[in-house]
Image 1 (tube, rainbow, N blue to C red):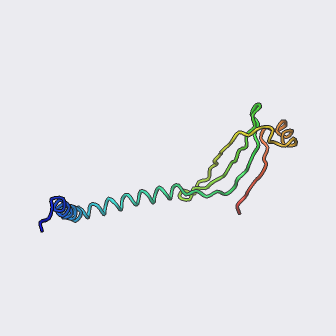
Image 2 (spheres, helix red, strand yellow; image 1 turned 120 degrees about the horizontal axis):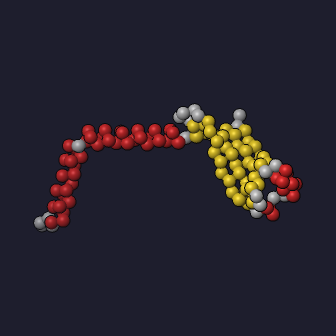
Image 3 (cartoon, one colour; image 1 turned 180 degrees about the vertical axis):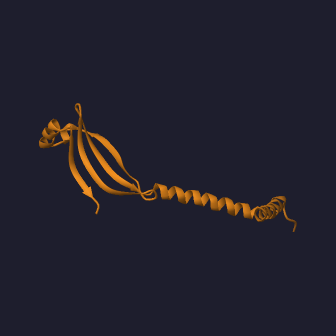
Length: 116
């Protein structure tokens, strides 16, 4: 029973691909090692540890925001810096006593977390 042309193409292609991988194997290993090193270095730089977080109510004009301020430390460099995120909320969702505090002070701390 003869082998059809598709099977011959697959067999020959497999031998060519195997030879190419074998021929370039050292270069492939060097490239893969370099790329893996870049990925691991990127992960090490991206790892940050949160140490303190504070939630504020902030009033800017007639708008009210909830804002979180987190102090983080970069694991690789050891440097500390602050990250912020805020979101607008309806003034009707804020209790009356907090609104009176916001009238006097436009930046009121609501909650603080400290990691020891």
